[in-house]
Image (cartoon, rainbow, N blue to C red; front, side):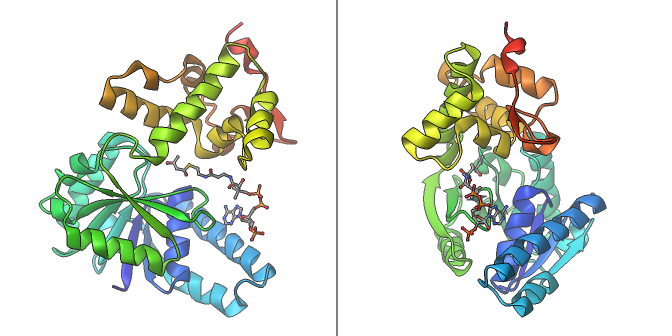
Length: 295
Ligand code: CAA
């Protein structure tokens, strides 16, 4: 396997492209938005430079990694020679269903189709294709070059040979694969999102402020980021969409997204990517007074 296509050049897509290219694979990074591709290459270059500065890689490895990545604005051109495609588009069911239909038509018959979805059913995506046995979840964590885990999700029809292949491939990019089954939120978000939602609820009900909630979890539980800071980092729109998938999938009110989260997303406050969420990222990072949203 040499050619790996990655669909979507956002934070997850560029991180996935980075780790495969650094491990020596040829990566075709695909996004319909040329500006997103340009930003992705600049981000990968900056992250590689960080590794050069820390003497973790040579300058020549940085250049080789960048040379291993080519960019495309059309799916059909980018996937022509791909043995594996990893879809990392926006977390939206309809968009992903459409992409899987297109991938099935455009990819060679033996291409494995993986998705980096955080919560959407692998089985549902696989059903859009004529090769459900070759569809699998490969859920990376953000920031991809730093985080050790790749959560591997088997759909209802995923074959054992495809599973073995993807687990071995994960080792080649220095990740640890953990295999789980295909139920809403899988394992990572099934456990993470209720914790974040409880932090939103704690803030919403006025038990403590943004900084206090984050400080308790950082200093008290040794979490690298507090839950509100982490939610901003993941994207509040992504958190909302994952909670909605779990709420809908299990029909259990415990997954109902907190109204403050819903309001913030409606107001366009998605966290780091829009410059404001629970914190303001425009100048000095400051906690935002969200109390006005519910008082
Ligand atoms: N790309 C590459 N490397 C990065 C990076 C990035 N975007 N951001 C940070 N790093 C590297 C730094 O170079 C540094 O490396 P060294 O230790 O070798 O020097 C290391 O990561 C730590 O970085 P910093 O010192 O700058 O900052 P930090 O200590 O505050 O760590 C962090 C930053 C790694 C992001 C840390 O805060 C952390 O682990 N946060 C939690 C992240 C997390 O929980 N991710 C999972 C989110 S859930 C998800 O992704 C799944 C989903 O479906 C929602």
